[in-house]
Image 1 (cartoon, rainbow over the protein chains, first blue to last red):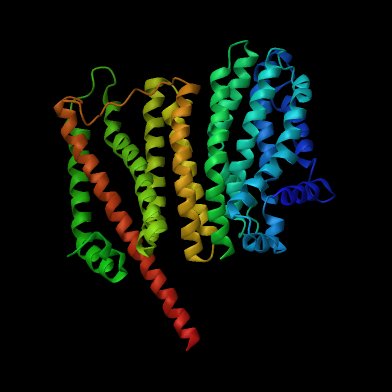
Image 2 (image 1 turned 30 degrees about the vertical axis):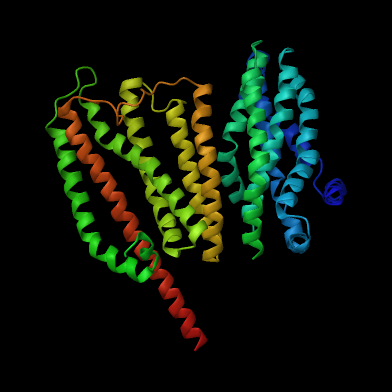
Length: 218
Length: 243
């Protein structure tokens, strides 16, 4: 299990793994926002928390099809399916590796991009906390979507169509926590609910993802 | 002993549904014509809303059926996952576009009613938003069916998507209440209330609701029969090639 995680991490970090692309996308998204809505700092700081959440979500979405696609193409997934490791663990580990290489850097980058969007000072801890507990859910739900579409050629657009409606509750609670933090309100309830979605997804979705992988490998 | 599982046999299903279909279609047509004419022309206007209130005769039944169609797909997907009856998987596939159109009708009639009443076509209200999300779920379900060539794999994967999607749809529905209180009025109709609305409105409304239910049933049966026939044709073509 540790070996698989290490392999996925090193494959993602080395050249061609796409590590850093999501970060760059997040940066560009944030840089484009003022062109779309105007540069008034007051309006930007009002929207900053929600926009950062949205940017992180889209950046995460961008790299989802890499979770299983490459392993599917070169046959690694068949080997993993016949190995003693249960496919459920494989799905969970793949989601974890995706979060470590995509979600965690996004969490680290969000405060810096918050400065660009003039995020109010009180919002920083809430933004970081909500992204930290929310982005794992994005990776796990995304791994499920990637498992569904792994057998489809050019399934990237379809993957977005399937995954984005599933992201609604996570985005809603996560952005609500960050926005309430920005307004100086107590944001514990949405934060706890975001964590709840992450834990629920982590408990249940690996099974659904493994079921989808089995169908695709049949 | 006859049981519902006998209809898992496509031949039995085709025979029975073929016999029932004209009746179901006729009941749907009669209920819809009677209910809609009655509702539109023979009920009084509302004291404050004027004649716009009459849009409920389309809005409410289609909204109810939009949710029920997804529930039917969920049950059909579960039956496919557990007992692997092909008719069930095809029924789920057949119901998706019908449910999607009901969702669209509910959204559209709601917008038409909302414009004069709320002064806006659209409002990010929990009910409206959850219907928009339901619409996206229908789209995803249909797109996944279309994208996969092997029908059994497609049935399996869409069934998994339907199960997971149902959980997330329910979570979204209640999450949205946190997010915005909304303009949409609460549920007017409930099963345990003694009288939901005044009888003059209630009788035509319940007739139209029955009509929409039978219309859904008829459309799903038609589409399922078409799917079964398409599958047979494909099998015949494959046989020809082998020979």
